[in-house]
Image 1 (cartoon, rainbow, N blue to C red):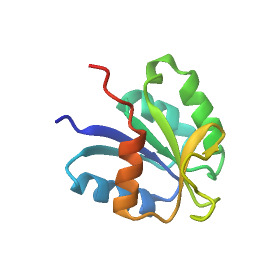
Image 2: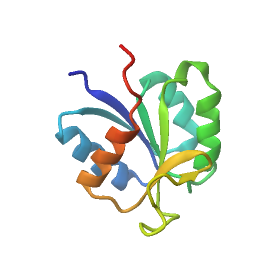
Image 3: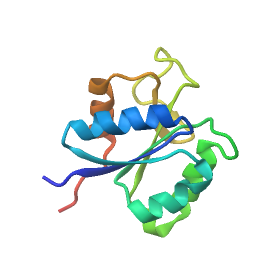
Image 4: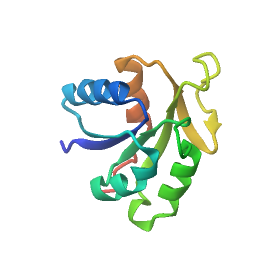
Length: 127
């Protein structure tokens, strides 16, 4: 099985590092971190992720703007974008609800809940 490529874009380096290590420990994912939203598009183009976990509230540029940049890039058209954010509570994060047209999950998250969320949102192989 090929490891799925996950890009985490969040301005909190401690959070992204912990999340990267935790996801990689499952053996199912290859994970890259980006802590500056202004560099997210460049990092995504270089890494070519299957899925992008994107924070909404970041300095300089918000996650919604980053998501729109990524969506407009033809090279990244197959990357799935999901928000991982603290702007909503777990009670507000009900299945099927979207923020700006994107699925989202409320922080903090458990590994089990996050891996299920990732699996549910990974692009399906068309082979």
